[in-house]
Image 1 (cartoon, helix red, strand yellow):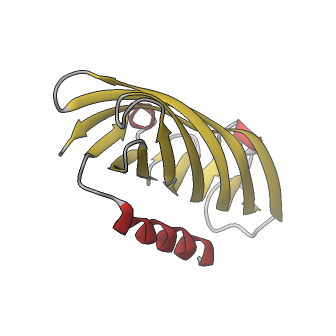
Image 2: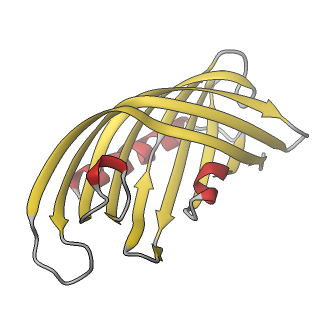
Length: 184
């Protein structure tokens, strides 16, 4: 919880530097494909900087004891090579997530229910295309580090914990194809 509070404080501290030059709201279409509810806000400041703040939530369970329940906050500071909200950008992101996952092959979550938190940071590269006056689409990919701290349980609910697990992960930490509406 302390890490979540720290990230929120950092984001709030950035607000005075954000101007109303450009503000966009977005949805990551890749998350939409996984039934994850998501909404992002990106605000520009200065000539070539922006702050992206996406929030994701997935409360669903699926047949066969499968679930990818999670929430994720992944703020990112972006530097645009040409102009904000157009063309190439590089980013520095951090992430914090809570999860309850089972029946999924990724990271050994197939034969157990795994509940805990993840924290980390990474770098990203992306490109944004203008579709119309207020509409854009962007693609972004990021690499970085995540620390996982979770409890491992037998599949199903109300069963005793098998193990406490800590894992370090290096690899893709961000992927998106987002549809963006520019408010201002």
